[in-house]
Image (cartoon, rainbow, N blue to C red; front, top):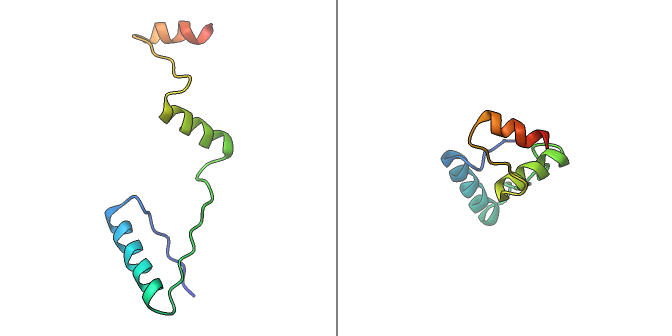
Length: 72
């Protein structure tokens, strides 16, 4: 058995994954098992999700204004 790590976000990774999916459906000997472990710990994953959604973001025009808002 051989393990191949594929980055699904790249063009080459998508192509290889599609080919592997095709082979796993139509031929024996190819099994796809996706590892769904998060890249980071739970707290960091939550922070990334909240940042993408714009939750609790602080906007400032300058560094001084940002520090002032962070002190509050």
